[in-house]
Image 1 (cartoon, rainbow, N blue to C red):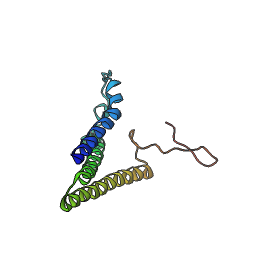
Image 2 (image 1 turned 90 degrees about the horizontal axis):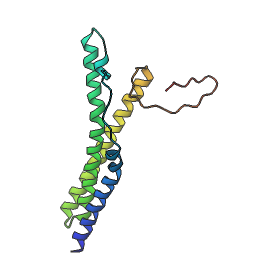
Image 3 (image 1 turned 30 degrees about the vertical axis):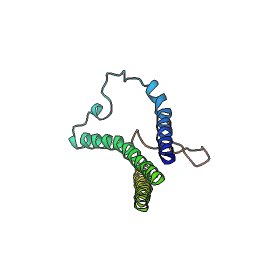
Image 4 (image 1 turned 135 degrees about the horizontal axis):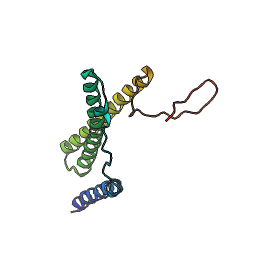
Length: 145
């Protein structure tokens, strides 16, 4: 009975954290009011390869946060399974899920950061790059936002 109460408490507290994190986003959500074409649809390029690559980049920019979210959820699932496990095989399964969730999260974030570093090093223009803070000083030019 005590284990069931603990697992119920974990589930309720996880649900509360989820709602408290995403609740404000849902309340202040607004629809797009622009009617002009934006993003890849606004490109007037005769080369269809550029438009195709832009659309692929847009899809990947939307998929990466979803993959990060799935890795975090898988890690939390492993923590919950480890916490409520009764036998050693279930604990091993939960521990393996935690390890693989952390490895997936590390790989996704590392590759994402490496790609953004290479893009900024080469100088590929992109509106969705990570802005690194810059302090203006002699000999250093900061990018304008």
